[in-house]
Image (cartoon, rainbow, N blue to C red; front, side):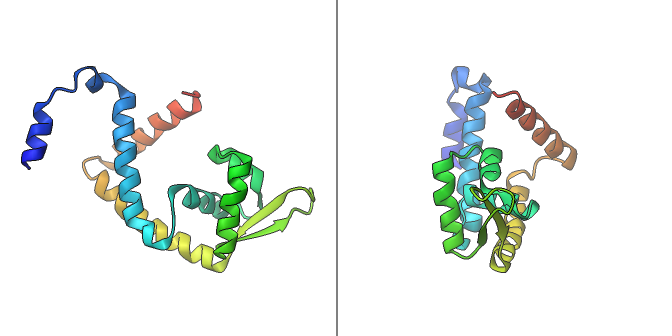
Amino acid sequence: MIEQEQENSVSLGVLDSLVGYHMRRLSTLFATDFASAVGDLGLRQVLFGILSIVGGNPGINQGEVGKALGIQRANMVSLVNELVDRELLDRRVAAEDRRAFELRLTAAGERCVDEAIGRIRQHEDKLLSDLSPPERAKLIQLLSRIGASGG
């Protein structure tokens, strides 16, 4: 508590008015709490993102998943390999384009995503407890708008 009082008594100067500063602090807070919530499942945010997109788009092309998440092709290959090795994803050559791979969740992948979603919802509920559902929706809308504009 004393640490918080000392922290609150220190002026942030111009940082207090910089959105990027607040977003970075919150990103760190959310990432740390996310790791605590699902770390024992062996999931990092990027892996959960891949599993989520594949779960919502069975048979999606590996390249499309990477594009949706902003993951470089070389990095995407190693991440998908990791999920295939853990038997959470099934990777097959695409019927329409033999150079591409289609991805689907395995039964173990579906169970992992389901377990993670429950934990992530609890994690977000804890961190966003001071916001009403409409405020949460507005926050997502505003963040999405910033992201869509290309920053």
